[in-house]
Amino acid sequence: MTSTTAAGGHQLVAAIGSQPDVVGFALAGVVVLPAETPEAAQAAWESLPEGVSVVVLTADAATAIGTARTAEAAPLSVVLPP
Image (cartoon, rainbow, N blue to C red):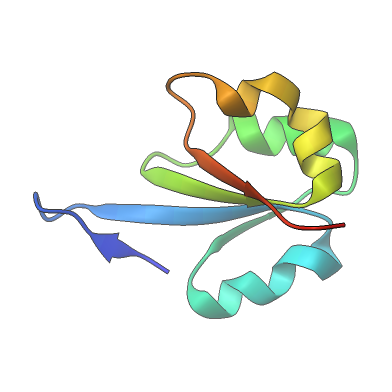
C-alpha cells in the first residue's frame, strides 16, 4: 500500500512480526519483514527501507523494539492486538 506525496514521492508501509501474522499484508503492497525472535524484530526495525512512514507491528515485535518506535524521527507505528 503506497500513497503519493505532494512532491511525487512514495510513502511505504512496512509490517514486522512473525510470518503467519504479517505475510498477508504483502497482498496490499506492504513491505513485509518477518521476525520470529526479538532480535530479528529489532534488526528489521533498524533496517527499515527509506521511505517507510508507517509500520504495522505484532505485539511481540512492538515489545522487542521498545521505545525506539517512539523516537522523534521514527515512522508512525501501529500495534496489532495479540
